[in-house]
Length: 133
Image (cartoon, rainbow, N blue to C red; front, side, top):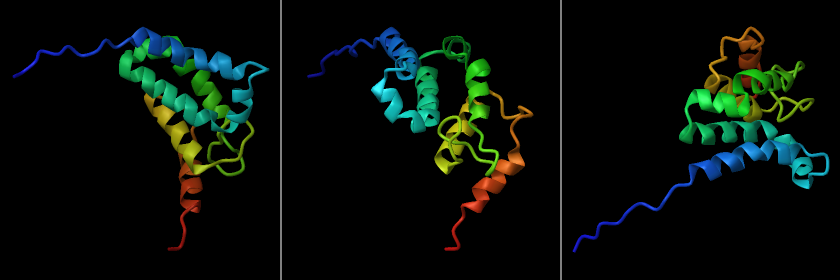
């Protein structure tokens, strides 16, 4: 016997509200969570943007997160001038994971052609991590 079951409701507005409120919560000067996750910020921003991208249009994500403005500017502030990679936050050492997240954020924002992105330095950084085996 086949039952006609409805899908449970999906409260996309609650998801949007939670995701967009994370930055203010984590950036608060008294935030314990913000302090202990500061080094993970690049990946957190990437996951927040992609989560919103599943439930909102690109223009809506940009409006909610200022993706093509302050987020992209922040990504470039996380570039490590010594290595050519990107750190997890401003002033952090370049790391493969956060370089990947930074490039993914730039791709979602359609900013891979931004003149601040030195693709050759990023490629050199990535290839420098290759192990002989």
